[in-house]
Image (cartoon, rainbow, N blue to C red):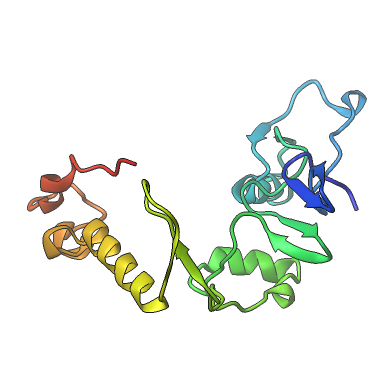
Length: 188
């Protein structure tokens, strides 16, 4: 299987640069390039691949697809590591993404979708304060801390995003209550 230059694999104390993936695609040799094209699509991620395909097949345009990486897929690609397929970018799909699902069906990839609950139950959870030693946390304490952070971040002063931005497609329409919190930032 071809190997991308992206990623590192550590096995038996040895480092290998790059991960095996079917997404590696050889560049077009310079001798096969034309002098001009109707359209140049920059980026062979999901949107670039679909745009290049549709422009060439539906519109009949002469398309040059340019990608900086040695593989296609953009942020969404699958690597083969230790005999397993690992999603290296966009991991989850939702049925409310009809355009993505249309592409999966077009290429008969919908049969490859693996259901996931997104998490494994941890055996042990450790926390290390900035200036302290690591210690074990219970799952309940972890969830309690995560909930406090999420509430502070996503619900300032107890307001939900729906409370603060009544018209999400017209963010400056009055009342624009979110502007009171626009100056806030997260700093590490």
